[in-house]
Image 1 (cartoon, rainbow, N blue to C red):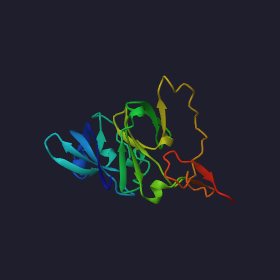
Image 2 (image 1 turned 90 degrees about the vertical axis):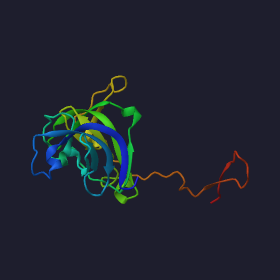
Image 3 (image 1 turned 120 degrees about the vertical axis):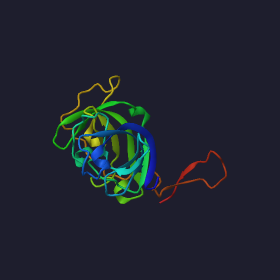
Image 4 (image 1 turned 180 degrees about the vertical axis):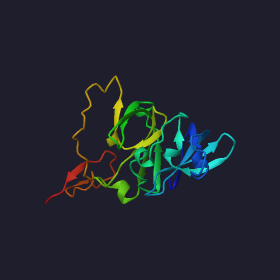
Length: 207
């Protein structure tokens, strides 16, 4: 979707200071339902919510929302590591990850336990489409056990699934970032046969 995308609604709490332009309301929360995400690169992802009094509030960052009234206050850049990569955003509740337990590595090197909610991904920009250190990253929405929400890439999450994940997790995995763009139609030495046959043959070209 371009700019705005529907998302499965999420019942939670909004910190009241975000309802008053950060001028008052600190320490108080209001029940809400988050139902829309806005992607404005390179800003943080922004969310629209409906309050329990019928007021609709648009374009708040993930730091505005909690699922426990006593959740700690964390900096936005700890909760969302990378900004939006494109105006074109996809919202995907990944079935395999549904409600999966995990833990997230924050900027202070602490691990915080949580639960998977859904995933945001992007396309149609250099940052979204290219591999490598400056390229593609997803943002998994995680409900942290402490009561906050975060948006983190694969490289900051350890997952738990007792029936399959059985080996120890390295203290710091040494896997390398993919730097390749994968194509399957770039070879110049083959072509399909020149016929209308449904089950066509593949021919190797001379030279």
